[in-house]
Image (cartoon, rainbow, N blue to C red; front, side):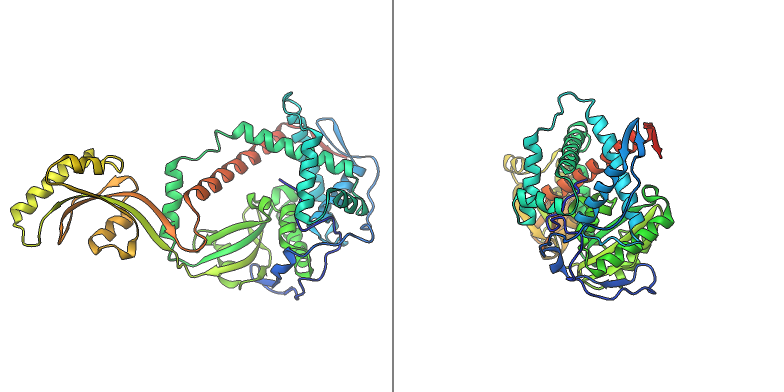
Length: 445
């Protein structure tokens, strides 16, 4: 998981761009405060002083006989504080320390696994390019960026080694699981169908932070940590920066951006929060099985998207005055032809047989189709051909050659495919690191 954020240039104390009161007595899922979206784009300032906390020197943990020292842990805690812009307090330092320690353990496991692949070597140039990208996101130069880090007590060499492992892990996971993360056309079509079916339902554009109980020391620890993060975000820490550092959800790499969520597709506890929160509000911690969520309601919409379908047809022209025998004969002819038709050959077959007409109806809003066509357009599977349909113009066979949701912010086929592939890759990466942890000898000192 990338640990950087474009707006956090190593500021250890956040500004007051988000100034609301935390509703300490509010039930889980209800609003804790209202966040200012402009805070996510506000440039951070370099710290004037380093956070005050002490750690014992010496070894704090070993990972397969590779040590993690008190110095390593302090450096990573400083990095977590800088990148999340969470102000360290007596209450949240234990959660920050736990997050930093778990990140270091996973980094050691990743580095050890990378070392097994002799050809996987990350050059200084690649690390420099990563730092340059981070600096560009922050609106500064690489030299100034590293200077800001040093002012926060973070040694550039420690950051460079952290980035070297991150880059290597991304390349290892991408190369190892590239073929397994691919999605089939059927999976993409199914996802698009689900979007179509949900087009009329209320939808929510949300950010999420998920604290996994097993990773932070149990459900109560996750709840306590979530309470601290909510308080920090209400006081000023940018949501995206906090999500990148603390969230265990796949969306963490996107600053907690979970995209548009359709009503009824999430757990009941989360749906209750979605129904309650107003745009701009941050929820109280929401306990679920295995962890705790924090939800940020970025936007809502009433499901105004349209359902679009791509159709082709073969027909036998018959006026409304046609006899029953004529209708039966035309229907039987089309029923005999139907098993041989596909979206690819339908028009060619129509032109090669006398008495048939073929046409590409293109993409249409289902609501604008003839009533006789609407049921086929809504219910038929993509790349299938319907039973004969009678209209005042004749007898038709309809092929549904594509279906998607139309409207503002509706994803394309390629976007849905990419989203599903990234989800698969994130899931495989999580399993990979869990397997490495299960096989490792990890000792806390």
